[in-house]
Image (cartoon, rainbow, N blue to C red):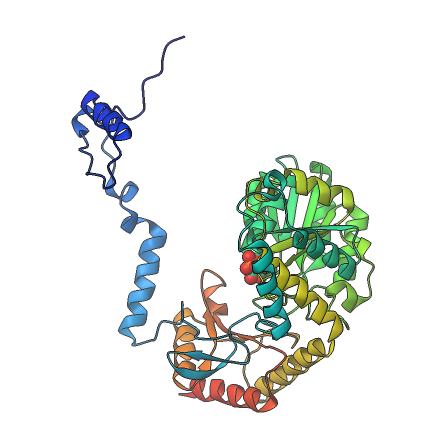
Length: 446
Ligand SMILES: Cc1ncc(COP(=O)(O)O)c(C=O)c1O
């Protein structure tokens, strides 16, 4: 067998230097001398656009948008530093703001019982499981959280992972393959799209919430594929509306598809007791195959989960790369989410207060003549502005008036759909909501 040449030729001198270094116990390393003369020249010159990150098309677009913002004197709405626990209000730069920019829907983040549970978890288990649960073992909190979630939802089993985004990517990417078809709502979260791309399946989207369009697509396409996955969300995070789930369930039956419902924004928000969109419609848990959720929102932690049939959840627990090859959830975060789940069940009035705030804010905005798109007035109300710079501008004006609300612009949404996005929480008061609706209207009128 011929020995393959190393990709990057290291000079003998360099190799000797490295070997010497390994034997020595010098604390401070000296810079290595790279002898580029030993590296074979490239066959063809590489144009700067392929070697200079500043010339990546996305980077250039990003720089142009930043420069436009600076030229227009807008304050940067991103990476604002909150100096406490953001809920209905927050403290930024030493100043108090009305806050509409976080997913602390039920205001459980910082709840004394949640904080106490995390302290206790740290004292017992430290801050990190340090490795994959399968390989290095788990803590009791991992299993307790998963059992509690499965019980709450009424599924056979549940597996929790370290990131909501990674949960969708690894689950969808792992379960489906090139002979399959994945069809998702046009407004599906990026994690769903990334998972579908990773799977290698044919990926298509249907117009937002349009089950009839999906029906038409599957009538033609279903016979061309082995497995078909349909993905919808419980509550859409950009628009604050939700799908007519019974129709999608009927499509699942008719075409023998799998159905994944991403409940990132609907758990704790929809349904009389916060159990999400299935409870909202009075549907049994068996109406879908995969119930995905995140722990970063209602559950004040960090991570994602997949709940469903025991066999498939257990298969994911033993084989999904994003779970198997990634560290287990930090014990204090698992404890926080577990405690939030307990509080949600003990205090269902939190869900009702959130929904009251959502409904009232929607009414107030409509009374001010604001374009709230299709918002159902639950926890999310968009204010459609119609241009990226316009959305950044109004967000910046609101900030100077003491309101923290994020702009959403292209490419996250289409340019004409650029918007402010308002997230409500259970502790927003009618007075705060009225002030904000009026401030948005005044800012737009300027
Ligand atoms: C619908 C949806 N799915 C998945 C995620 C990813 O969750 P996480 O931010 O917890 O990783 C999000 C994030 O906001 C989301 O909105």
